[in-house]
Amino acid sequence: MLILEGVVMTTFVVAALLTSAQLMSLDARELDMGDFFRLMANVGNTNVVLHPAVQGKVNLTVKDIPWEQLLDIVLKNYGLAKEVEGNIIRIVPVGILQAEEKQKSAAAETCLNALPLQTHIYVLSYARAENVAPIIAKMLSSRGTVVAYTPSNAVIVTDIEHPERCSATK
Image 1 (cartoon, rainbow, N blue to C red):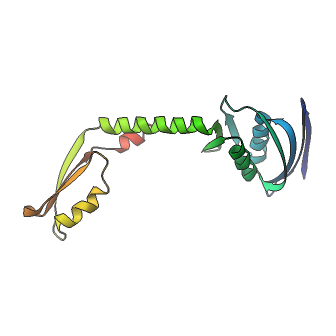
Image 2 (cartoon, rainbow, N blue to C red; image 1 turned 90 degrees about the vertical axis):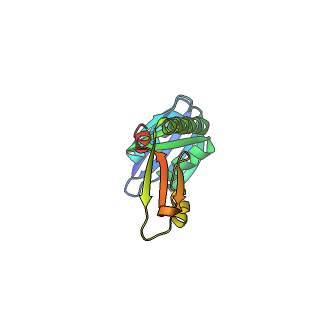
Image 3 (cartoon, rainbow, N blue to C red; image 1 turned 45 degrees about the vertical axis):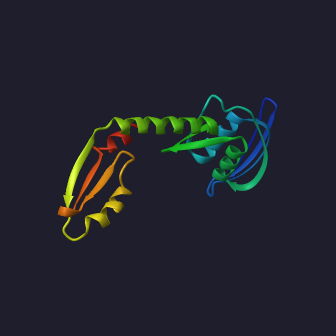
């Protein structure tokens, strides 16, 4: 069992870590949030990147809980969110993360709107065009259209050409 004891300015911390099960007990008063997330990174053997707006003090007493659960509870309690990419955990205020997601969504929508449309005609042999058209319509983008052409039992599908180009620009 590893026992950490430390005083950081006016902070008193005693943490007992059971490294095999990744359970931890922690009693912290006025622990700087940066120091708390640094401790979580050490316990979880991962990397943590904090947004500059992440500030404050953590007060808690917990016994024998998984470090991931403790991290999630503190994030929720302080209005923060995490974004995991590989072995990096990015900690950011919820409002900022939502604004970033909205910005990414708008950029993806702009990209999709800039792509050219492409039209294909599919002549069906074993299904009726008017039955297939509504099913295809559910799979199209917001710019896509499908028309059932019953005289030749065909569906005319118009949609964005190569939409994966926008998802590759994350």
